[in-house]
Amino acid sequence: MIIKNILLSFQLENYKNIRFLKFIYTHPKFWIFGSKRQTLEYTSKVKLILIVSLLLLAFDIWASIYFMSWLGEILSVVWVIFCLPLYFVIANIVISPLDAYLKNRIITQAKKKINSYIHLKVIAITGSYGKTTTKEILGTILSESFNVLMTEGTKNTPLWISRLINTELSEQHDVFIVEMWAYIPWDIKQLCDIVGPNISVLTGITLQHLERFKSLDNIIDAKFEILECLWEDDFAVVDSSTD
Image 1 (cartoon, rainbow, N blue to C red):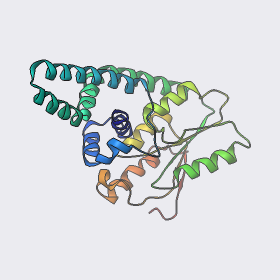
Image 2: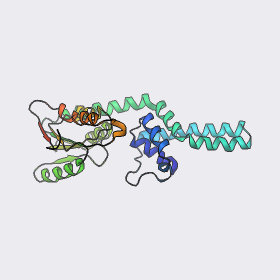
Image 3: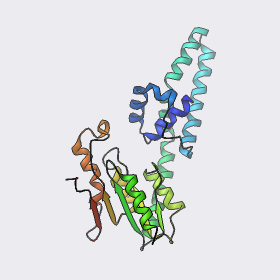
């Protein structure tokens, strides 16, 4: 259970090593209780990180049993449990070259595919609130007349969206609605580079994720990336309360 919860936090932090370590060591309750809203997705990356980290963990436990006294063994096991997040980080670093290659291949394939659908209209939605509601309302209305594909839940990273494009988007779709989240600057720009929206919707901006953005100005800059990616003939919808 502890291993699963720590892996979940790593996944929620998008496998950013420093961000993950900062979160997991400042939220000790997460080790035991995890999250009531999110569950761990056993992706290929999660499985690989788990395998590599468990191999490292097994080696350290074996070494402590073989070389230390019984007291040292007990202390080393306690230390190993405390350092569990570090094993995941080390495993993430070890597999990073392979992960980068595979991720780049998936994203490149998605870009090529979506760019080939000239008729497809892509609607990108972001904001500090109302993203999912706006997406669901738009999807419901447009589905009356068009074949619509939408992103699901919190699956909005470049890799998740690229996989959705590669596996589910087809020539029969008329509209692709993409909900975009941002935790740091350039997150939305990266997503826009993949899907190339024709219509961007900015629902509103408020003080959210300040621990990452540090200031309201940084939040505004990050959210406005969804408008900056548009071409001259594209269309934008902005909440009137957003300056």
